[in-house]
Amino acid sequence: MKREIIIIGGGIVGLSCAYFLQKSGKQVTIIDENDITNSTSFGNAGLLSSFDKTPLSYPGVVLNTLKLMLKGQSPAIIHPTLDLKMYKWLLNFILSANEKRTKKTMMLFEKYGEISLKLYEKMVKEDSFDFDYHRTGMLSVFTEENSYNQKLKKYNYIDEERFKILNNNELKEYLPSATSKIKGAILFKKNAHFDSKRVMLELKRHLQEVGVEFILNEKIENIRVENNKVKHLVSSSKIYEAEQYIMSTGYQTLLASKCNRDLTMIPAKGYSITFEMPKEFIPKTSTIFNDLFIVMTPRRDNVRFTSKLEIGSSDTKVVLKQIESIKKNFFEYNQYFEMKNEELWCGFRPLTPNDIPLIGRDEEIKNLTYAMGLGWLGMTFAPAIGSIITDLVVNDKKNAQSDDILLFSGFFQ
Ligand SMILES: Cc1cc2nc3c(=O)[nH]c(=O)nc-3n(C[C@H](O)[C@H](O)[C@H](O)COP(=O)(O)OP(=O)(O)OC[C@H]3O[C@@H](n4cnc5c(N)ncnc54)[C@H](O)[C@@H]3O)c2cc1C
Image (cartoon, rainbow, N blue to C red):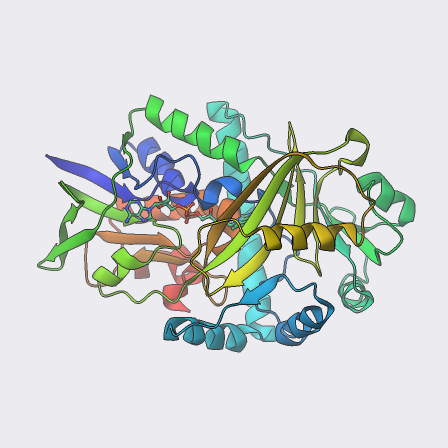
C-alpha cells in the first residue's frame, strides 16, 4: 500500500506539519517509535518567547558562562566525549556568538515568532483547541547586576506596547516569591505561554478525528533510497512506502545520516519539575530567571520549572543532583515554599549552533523533506515550520523557490 505523505516523528514539529498538510487536503500518516505521550515536546516550559530574546550564542556567552560556573550557578554542563561532532558544534557555536549574527537571528525570531503566535491563535479559534494559551507577556528577571545593567542600556527608551521595566512593587505583584536579592526585572509584553502537554494531546486528538493515520510504537530503522528518491522506510518487521516523506525525529539524527546528511545538531538535555505551588506565590505570567536559565511557567493546575543545558550526555534518566541544583539556584533568590506532588522529567533539545532550524528539501533525495533542529524554541516556531513545510510539499516547490526556507533554514546559513 503506497501512502501519500509519511511523517517520521510525532513531536510538536511532526504534528504541526500534519495539521497544515491535512488542512490542505493531503492524506497524512505519522509514524512514531513511541506512543506520543512523553517526547521533548511534552515536558518543556511552553514559552512562546521569540520577542526580545537573544539567541543562546550571543557575544559574551563564553565569559558569562564561565563566571556562572565559578559561582556554581551555571545552567550549562559539558560532558567531555570522544564524539568529534560535539567539538565541531561547539566551534560553530562560538563562531556564531557575534553582533551581526545575533541581530539577524533576533530579527528572524521576531518574524517567525509572530507568524507562529498568529497561527496558534487561529488554531484555537477555528478548531476550539484547549491549549491553556495566554499572551500575557514574559517576565525577565535578573540576578546579576552586570547583566541587568547591560539589558537596561539596550532598553533605554519607552515603548509601552513592547516592554516595561518594573519597580519593586510591580515585581512583587508579578513574582510574589521574589526576594531583595533580585537586581531587576523587565516585562516583555509580546510573548505568550501555554501548557505543552495539553497542546500535544489536543493536536493528537484532533488529527486522529480528522483522519490522520497514526502508526505508534514503530521505530523506523532504515531508509531505502533508489534513483534519488526514498523508495521505502524500514522498521523491524515492515516496510512503508509513500510519495513524500517528512523527517521530524527531534534530536535523533540516525535516519538523516542514513541519507548521507550530517546534520550540525546535538542533543542538549534539560529538566522540568511540575508541582503544585502555594497560591500566594504563583507568578502572574511566565518568568525567566535570565542569569540562572530557569523558567517558571504558571499552568491551569500547577506550575513548571525548567532548566539546564547539558551537552555530551545521552543518559535518558532524571539525575536528581540536577533537580536539586535547580531548586537551590531558584531559592537563592526566592522565598522558600513547599513544592507539592512533584513530577520530574528530562528531555533533549535538538540544538543547532546558531539557533536556526534545519528545514527544507534534501537537495538530492527528491521526495524527502527535513523539519529538524528547533532547539530550545520548537514549541514557539512549530506552526510556522508546519506551514512552511506544507507550502513546499503541496506546491511542489524547490528550496530556492521558498523565501522562508532561504531565510530561516540552517541549510542556507
Ligand atoms: C527543558 C526544556 C525546556 C524547553 N522549553 C521550551 C520553551 O519554553 N519554548 C519552546 O519553544 N521550546 C522549548 N523547548 C524546546 C522544545 O521542547 C523542542 O524544540 C521541541 O519539543 C522539539 O520538537 P520535535 O518535534 O522536533 O522533537 P520531539 O518532541 O523530540 O519529537 C520527535 C519524535 O520523533 C520520534 N522519533 C525519533 N526517531 C524516530 C524513529 N527512528 N522512528 C520513529 N519515530 C522516531 C520520537 O519518538 C519523538 O516522538 C524546551 C526543551 C527542553 C528540553
